[in-house]
Length: 356
Image 1: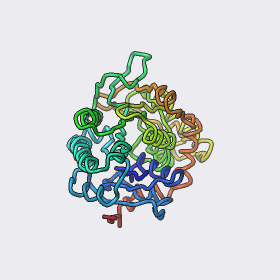
Image 2: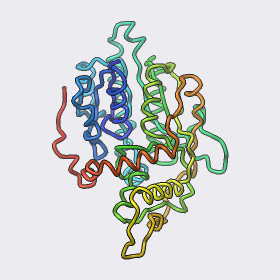
Image 3: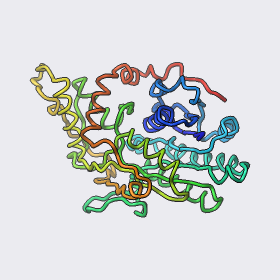
Image 4: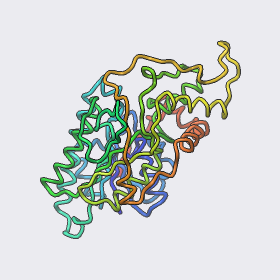
């Protein structure tokens, strides 16, 4: 396979590229604009591979996309480029509309132009894989139901609404133009190389710094947690074996309250790097937990039914929440140089470059 991965310098995108280079024979082109969340240092382990190529491209730039497709000649596209932080979407929705909706439209059109010129056998084998989120389905508060592939969309935030819009565009390009598409909707990811604004790394790094550990509301919001490397494996299975036009939900079978997640991190840190008695008399990391005002429109519960991908493609997560979280906490303890450079902003220095 020759795979274009958009957003390949992001958290999930970089995990996908590491998986492709380290565990398959695929050739990979990473298309990334390098916004604040794009970090090429997350790809240090594979960047010297002759099968890895980087193009600094905004997916809203149609000409740059055409040039990249022409240069790389992909057999598949895995579309992960997106603005993804809910709080940022509430404070400034414009970037989410531009990247997640307009950017996806531009990418679909660039893909369609390229795909239309392929020989018939290459057209048949080509795939456009769109990676989305369970947040498009809305809120399961008050029920014991799970999100399935046929759950109606009911997004709550500007972020989830923009992702729902992009999902609809992808399906429309398949129905109207015949573009061979695949869609996946995943639950909350966690793991190595996660940008520190997200819950798990934010709690780990705040705790190590002795700072408050903010928890929205009463911390009773429930999410299904998926280890990012399990997700990367699932995405490759879908790209290779998925049926055109189908949607696959990907989850970790790990429903946890947010407060439970924070407390689990604290317990691991108490074991791995126990606190010395502070000037404030703090003995355990849990004493740093601070409840803050809830975000507007905060969904109470997400939960994924991943039986379809398990049944049809044979994928199951390898990590439990307990094993995955331990690996994650240990990774942050062992890789302070990576996250220190994120916190200082040094990771953004000297990043210009392209294969185009």
